[in-house]
Amino acid sequence: MDMSNLKLKQHLLMDYLSKVGYCANKQRSIEKCIELVLIKGSSSNITTYEDLFFQEVQEQGLTPESYRFKSLRRSLGQLKNFDLYGKYPDGNYTGFIYVTNGFDNLNDYYKSLAIYHLENGMCTGKRKNTVRIEYLCAILFYKHFQDNGAEVLEEATPKMICSFFHDGIKQIRGIGYLGHIRALMKILRLREPKQAEQADYILNFLPNIPKAYKNFEFLSKDESDCIRKYLENPDNTLSLKERTIGWLLYFYGLRGSDITAMRFDNIDWRKDIITLIQSKTDYPLTLPLNAVTGNSLFDYITTERAESDINTIFIPSKNPHTPYKKIAHIVMKIFKCAHVRDKGGCKGVRLFRHHFVTYLLSCGVECSVVSSLTGHMSPESLKFYADADHEHLKECALDISSYTVPFNLFDI
Image (cartoon, rainbow, N blue to C red):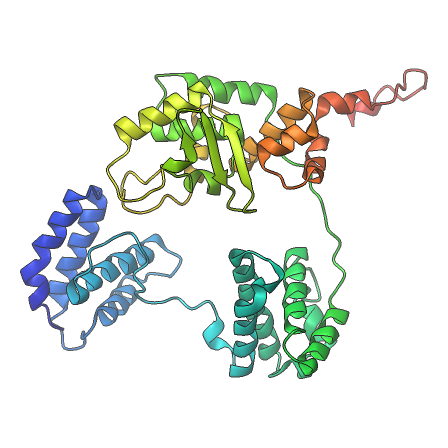
């Protein structure tokens, strides 16, 4: 393995990491990879970065799910791009050690069907991400047929179709997969008459899985008050970024994906409004920017946010040149520090959204107004929140005081 270029230019990479604000842990990770290459790269059985990676994985007993596996793959990939192509780390996927999604295990016939859906799935007006999910489901579905001996759709039996959802003892896939398979077959019907017949055959034998609705989790008034008091406390342990994200969740019930995708041009400081296109629905949403959230946003942007060429408002503190992806850890921190649900229970971004909707409904706000504030495309979406509107549900209760009931009935 030729290490001459890395020996000569390694200092340029380390200087770059320090200059653009990469955290000490990231710099140390790259530094360790440099040492690894310089020490073991001279071995006769190491001719590429890939050879070195797989040798380390085997020696250290790393699994693809482990953090160390992913960290080594990421850092070695960045080092390879710098050494061989002169590319500095920019937060984008390096393509090093590509992890297959199962597509490569399909035969050519099933590959063509999966690719057809990926290329034509948007013809019905679906979003690209939705089609991508259906494509991944198609890979699983066709791989299931292939593993059971059906090399083409004509060889698929009703038992094969049903066993994708039920293993004979329990249900292993639900209505979500069922919807994806139906969408898959409807697009396949457009390809040619012969495959339209095959698609209809599969549609006829898909199981009927009832849609189950669970009551939404929501924050009680006491829990909501605890979280608000913690966010208001100037001496709490939250960073400005964490506090700001907390306020966006608390006051607006925004989805996590919309918060992480929020850009500077989404904020109109003169008119005090937030405008964005929702990532889930592509539906526009306009919200008033209150003083608490606005001040917190301004403080974060002007005093804590590192310089970065990323256009989104929120960026990782450890790696400021990559987009922010998840806020779940911030939500968990808020719940933990506010001592909400210490004994267990649902904790997540959705709780804030559910609380936002149920609070507005309990205050008597009209459904059309609530829909406009949450960005729901249809007021029908609110009916799932009605079960948590206890104040109005009490008005529907029947008086049973005139009936004789056992004294211990309500102890059950």
